[in-house]
Image (tube, rainbow, N blue to C red; front, side, top):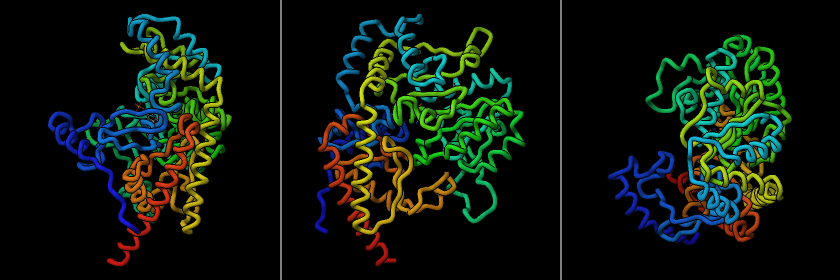
Length: 450
Ligand code: PMP
């Protein structure tokens, strides 16, 4: 294949070297560091595309990890945010708009009987867990392997898949995400593999009476969109009821994306508490903790604390009001899901023509791509899958003007603007075809030298 011109990252590379002197890793969030010569700095985004400071244009399937559900710089939401600016920001007092947004959310998600706001997904899940602990008087909680619930201490326990021997009968070790998490917290966190009903029942038998909550993302938005079987989530619901445990469905990524009522609406399982963030306001910082009235009323003086200076900021709230109106009253979600379906079909056509076995996980609005006949059923399965083809393909896609996460554990996200701009699809598929061929060449070369 003729050599492909590499994108020019001269300005981004220079910015990286300058930023490194002031910002750890040269970035504001660790996950934005993609290597000394591949960390990009954004000039702006519009619709389904992002432009870096070198002028490279990308069809963007990260969408900031999901928030830009309508597309970047959406005129309708930005106009609403500007009106929110005129309100004045924060007062440490309430505005009428809070109720209007809460009513909208309750109308879209039946489990959201009562609603509170937070600023980020982390804050919302942190509030949800505190609420569950306050309501039950218990401290322990159950997480699902491969799940991610934000960067607060209690949520930062994970199954160590890197060092897990797939042939062993032992469970992967429970470790913290990085340093700085107090070891004394470890005994409160229990982990179960997704989609293993026997293990779930066994864990509840052993620990059910001490658990405040079970947290689950039925589509794992940080683990390739691996999906729970409906029966698994239904079993979780039954076991929670039996043992007096609160079920928290974390819809920070799936909420207002996979459907108006989230993944819980699709699966028909009602949580006690639910959390939303990304798609609520098309990228303006706001999150939601909502749930059953009796549980939510534990947020009171003398009960579970909840609040924060920036909670329900007038700009984010106004953006949320408009974004949720659009998602509720227009076919935006259908538009982006149907784009996702066409994208998956297009990618499959390219891969099938080269006899490359593959499969998808998740939902057309946020899907994971696997180079195996059967997609993994849980995080343990993921360890057995070969993701080297994906990693190499993602590397080439970036050079070819398509941004997906370099780590195969992050799904591809669709936005309404992708669906309204046919060139997003044609540009992406052209890039995928080239990236796949370059990846095949790469592995052929590697095999020759093996
Ligand atoms: N829960 C889930 C399911 C998430 O995907 C994330 C973020 N990726 C969070 C919580 C934390 O959200 P934030 O990054 O807004 O703090």
